[in-house]
Image 1 (tube, rainbow, N blue to C red):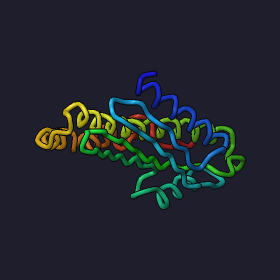
Image 2: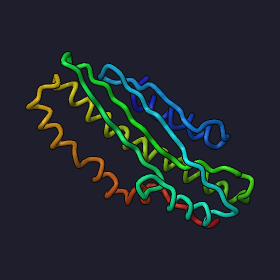
Image 3: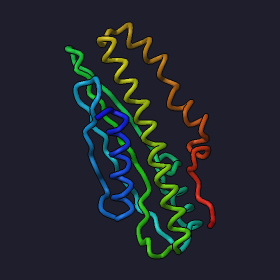
Image 4: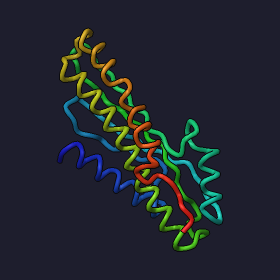
Length: 173
């Protein structure tokens, strides 16, 4: 299975688990041209009688002032065994029965897009780790790689308006 397929299947599994209310934390091993990789997904609870209330909660409770957040890191040892880790934080709608069917469908649409947006941040981090591994962990190459990759995450958010152009928003049905 390709790394992209593995990430996409993980996003689908996690999204379905959130929809069914089955998990709060999930860890997934990832494949790649590095020694080890892991994606951990955590959730924070939101609820309310309508989407406006849920949105206000996400604005207040979301990580670092966002509805969701992906943080990636990588490390390597003297043998250039690169370890990649990512942690995604997403909102989880509890008491789903409080929303009407149209609002629930809108929530499910948005959370699927938001999950994919955060997985794109993970893919950017994975690319950075892969570049380090391919360079043989050479210190001079790592400096060059860091300069090249440092702004890609922020550029992605600027290009997508933190996911809004991809569909990360809630509209009243």
